[in-house]
Length: 128
Image (cartoon, helix red, strand yellow):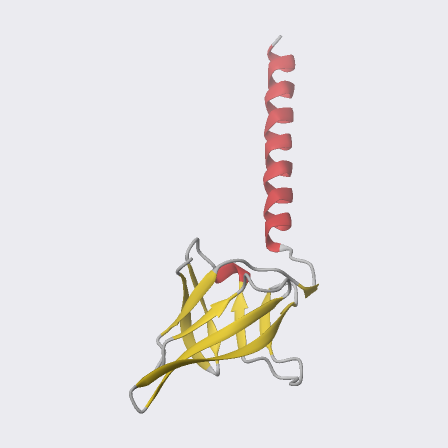
């Protein structure tokens, strides 16, 4: 009777260990290629009020920058493509080979994401 119980306990431990290892590997893996993100994220710190809108077009982000021209506020926008390399997302112009931004999946929290933007360490903070 003790042998059966010990074998059962060892079996349960083996199954738990195996399932935990599998789930960790799956959570770290992201497919490569174009990807979709959601929401509007403010870039902080930023000398001008800049934000990335991931809601406009699948696989793309729109950088919206507020500009003050002689007392008049206007907005400038630029489109970027989102590409995954399996470890993070590259945000780059389709006409350029070097990404403007790079954010690792492991550095993303619920509403804050640390990464690089124009060679500076920044936070993306989700506003919408």
